[in-house]
Length: 208
Image (cartoon, rainbow, N blue to C red; front, top):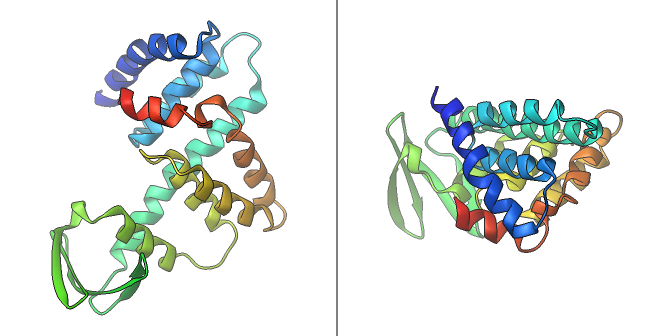
């Protein structure tokens, strides 16, 4: 119910703003912008609902819709793998975060304690900094090219979108062979959407 309500709010609140910013009447870019906002909030139900609305628009480009469906899929699945990676962390694991070596001292359902630069630092598990989470996830993933599809989707849909990292991961996946390269090409093409161009990320963050 909460997700449906959020979807309704997004469709009503952000559509007019986006239209004013880009000066267009076409509902498709407006709705796709709302999909991206929902993905940034990891509200995959709302994203799916809006994409369904997009798919039934008259004369819609179904290839374009399919690319966004791929982004939704990989962004959603990334969260599944992220949780698995965190569940696999045990005391004694070591990671490198921004060129700093850190070691896990203790982790359970409530807390996460690590040691870096001679100090123990404690966080509630749900508040683990994102750079540490990503170091854990990237260490947990193996070298299969397909894994870069999920990593790229994360960087393309996190609140402060990192287009260059998303592009880098998808380009690696693109070299992965049959199946993987096709999905990677579709995801790379989505970066040509206007909301991923310079300026739109700033607008997006200001509106949330």
